[in-house]
Structures are given as C-alpha cells and as structure tokens.
Image (cartoon, rainbow, N blue to C red; front, side, top):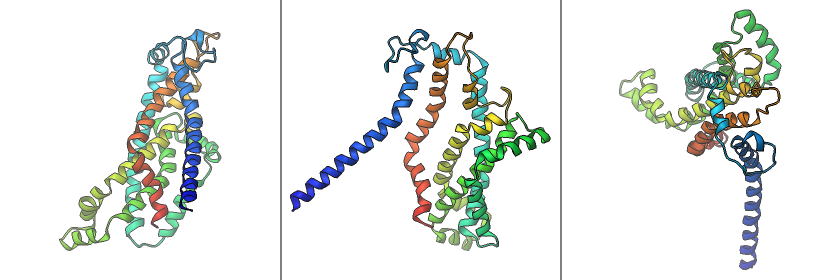
Length: 281
C-alpha cells in the first residue's frame, strides 16, 4: 500500500510539474519572441525564425537616438515616481488608521476604497477628459498623476493595512508608556517595522502606474506628458515602407526590464503583501 501511495504522490508531482512547465512556457514565449525581434535586422524581421539569423543592436540604437522614446521614458519614470510617493504616503496613514484606530466611518472608508479599486476605469475616461480639459490639466504630468493616485491608493491601503496588523500592538503601547506621543510612536517604532511593507507597496503601485495605457492614451496628446506604453503605439519607420516592428520590440524590452528586475528581487515580499490580508483579517 505504501508503494502505491508513493507512486501516486510521484505521479501527482510529475503532473503538476508538467502543468507548471506548460504555463511558464506559455507565458515566456511571447516575451522571448519580442526579444528575438528586437535583435533582428530589418531584412530578417519577417523571416519567422525564433533565433535571429543576423544579430544587430540597430533597433536599440534607433530608439535612443530620437526624443520620441527618451522623452516618453523620462515622463514614465517621473510620473510613476511622483504618483507612487504620494499614494504610499497617504496609503500608509490611512492603513495605519484602519489597522490600529477605532473611529466613525471606518467600515465606510474601507468599503469606498474597495469600490474605487473595482470601478471600471474605462467608464471614467470621458468624464476625466472633460474635467481635465476644463481645469487645464489635460496633457500634463499632474493630469496623469491624479488618476494614478486615485486608483493605486486602494491597493496601497489594502496591502499596508495587512502589514500593520502583523506588528505587535504591545510595542506601540510600550513606546507610549515611555512618554512617546502617538505621532512619535508611529514614526520611531511602527514606521521602521513597517518599512518592508511600505517598500513592497511602493513596488506594486509603481508597476501599476508604469504599465498604464488607458489613461496615458486618453489624457495626453503630445510628447510633453506621453508615457512609454502610449509612445510605442506612435512609433513609425523612417518612411511609409519601413516596418517599425524592430524598434517597437526594442522599446518594449527596455521598459519591461525594470519590472522583471523588481519581481525577481522582491517576489517573496510582493506575494506576501498580496496574500497576507487573506490570511489575517
């Protein structure tokens, strides 16, 4: 019986291993195909081969030789960093209040934040477009930072509140007994302990802002505030007969590298941040 049990366990492991391998290959093939296209010459871009017959860095050199990509890259980095900083600061304070304090409207605050997170963004595009045009925010950094903060703040609150609940309440009480004010206890005791959670939340919010396409497409019209995901759709060749696939692929690889590095280095903390709330309420 023990032999049959061990055989069944081995088969299940092999089966799950095969399923995992299929999922990984299915996810990686499109990305590897884009990497392959980015290193192909214009003459071999449509040859259908997975491995380039002729390797070249011409596509990477071309995207960095014009302002169309470098300006969009600068906009993406600046807008994502500003939105992340503001969302994490406000999210930290809100999450601390939800996790530690009792106040009227606490459940309403949590409900509204979840409602905002679930709201379909496409339904807000037209109102935001009209509002930002009336306020003079259309095609500006601020015009993108504000909706990014709005939609990333619930994610920050949800993730950070789970981290705050895991910090022993007794540490804060001990600091107050030693004479610290609530603000000092938060700044000197709670905030350092919550730093890993804050950092993880910042990564998640930055990825959300970095990958956005919908708001960046509808709330910008020039290179002054256009971000990279949208700039890629405006890539053209030097002439109407030139295929920009190689340049688009090279740009896609460049903007994907930071996200891959973030996930590889901090995958454990990202998973912990997304799942801790489901384990501990």
